Length: 180
Image 1: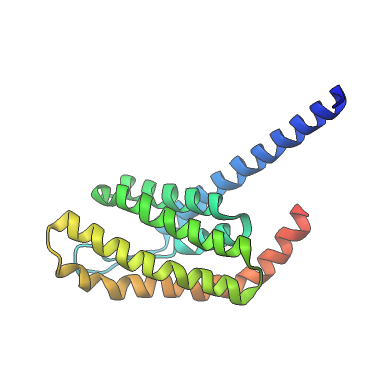
Image 2: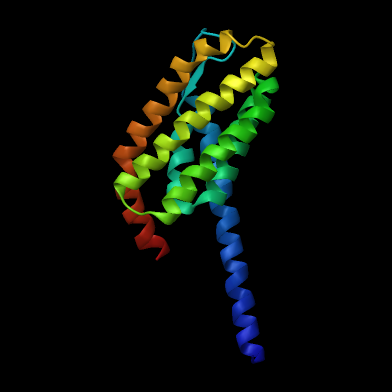
């Protein structure tokens, strides 16, 4: 390999890394802001915060893949928990939402098209329900009360699926034009 080829390859690799870091940081910020700014606290069970943070989580996972989805979701919502009085939930959120973002991104990387994006988001629903059921059980020591949080989790993810389904195809087309 020539010296010029090595430099060009290293430069291309560096640019891809910069794009990944920048995109993922934007995802973290948007997940945090959508969780913080657009939420309603309900008082069913110990949990009970319905927010729109899953919208940017799903969008970034579908557009940029499993790594960005996992990091943006886990860190963005985990930071929200740390800074808003839900501190005990932060480690669980980091794991549960990180897995949600990874799964949505994984499916979206392998299969393209609206139907697959919808299926990917639906696959996140049982992860949310089971993950937060376990989290609430661990936090409260009560394994019955977490069932009261299931409707809120269904509402939260269901609303995010609907909103994301409306915007994802145009966003995907725009991202493809910009990113090539």
